[in-house]
Amino acid sequence: MGFQCRQFYLKDDRCAMKVSTDSLLFGGWVRTDEVSYAADFGSGCGILALMLAQRTNANARIDAYEYDAAAAQQAAENVHNSPWPNKVMVQQADVLTFAAPNYSYDLVIMNPPYFAAHLSSANSQRQLARQGAAQEIWQPWLARAAQLLAPNGRIALVAPQQALTSIIEATHATQPPLVIVRHCNVRSVPKRQPYLVLLELTRQGCEQEFELEELTIRDDNKYTDAFLQYTGAFYLNGTVT
Image (cartoon, rainbow, N blue to C red; front, side, top):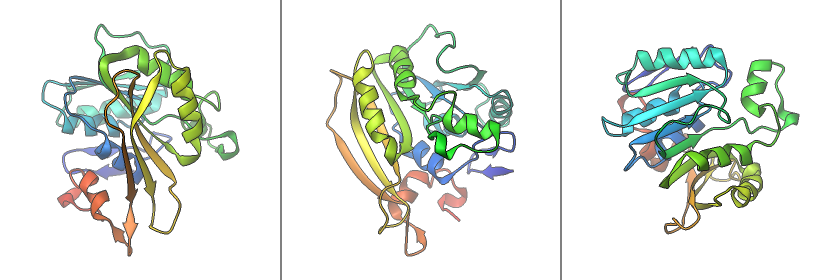
């Protein structure tokens, strides 16, 4: 199984979590200006790392950390076959314990294993990707990202709406505390409640003007202009089919 983007191709058959509309939207939504060093926590097949590679300057470095050995290997292969084999570095490593580099990150993106136990899968690899070793991972993942963040760096994450309260609580517990500066509620169609949230955070004291956004993926059985604005650079011919 694979997915063809405009500038790169992804294989994901050895990864628990497949390429999805949510990950493509998140990768297009996150801001990449002034990014020299970026980290992708829980990289999976490498889709977000490669989207960052496409959107950042030629000298930027993206470190992709993935715990699962099969997924890390596939991510490394996807990177090797992409236009940016020397720009993205894939490491099989635990997000919480990998050796810190000798530089700080301007951007940390994460798509954590956030699903609760009642959504656990019969597939053990998929279950690990979706819920991790513990049901609650927001505080340790955010704390780890904050430790590695440059003074004016940003953390961006994607999560289900029902996780928002836990994320807010985790931002208060993190040292230094984190502040949400950009918040996007995502609906699948106009009449449904938001099911997804995209967030951007900074250290307390580095706040910028708060931005709240509402985005709908489909309307009248077609993708919305707002969705295509974020994803068009990755789909073939700049459109979604």
